[in-house]
Image (cartoon, rainbow, N blue to C red; front, side, top):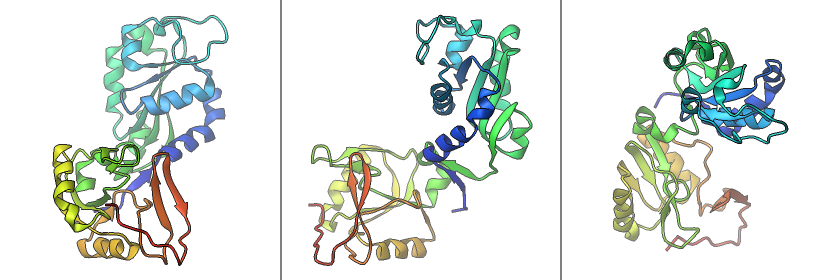
Length: 272
């Protein structure tokens, strides 16, 4: 698996906050996101700047709204095309062609009011947009699309508990995030006797894999898998349930991962 430039939602959020003064200086009065991934940064920018936010399709169709996704402080235009200084946002660009395709769909008057922004851009793509916040070359992955990149998943390992599914809500396994392409290795802390049940769950939810490793409960085991299979973890900083008391114990909670220092007298049991 090649080494990717990787950015998380936190990275995206922090990068936008670092550039708020720069964005404020343009006095944009409408923020527009290119579906789907452009809606994440567009919404963050709109919330920080307290500006209305719409999707590109709403802009193109000039769909009226009484309240376009922000706190109204005064009377404002109800139709997206009524705004005079529009920021069109996507999360990344390599060639800039997506923005060109979008601009081609707009009428000339609206297109002239649009400034394009790609949060991340290659050096080449950065020359094809009006603004970008960080230069990021290929290969790259984002937290919000990593599970839907075929090449990345083909040589990756991914934890079942807490990432693919959780039983924290009901006691029965329910999906959390489902990869769109086959994973090379799925690892689980469940006992071998649960293999058939786990495979049935994965098949039922369309999760494909080359190998399913059971009873992986320590960092030592996981590091060995990574070394033997010559793979990377889908989330390299992801925590996992461990019985190795020399490690920090990571316990999955529906609110997220929280850490609990291992105590030498603790005995952690398998998930039965």
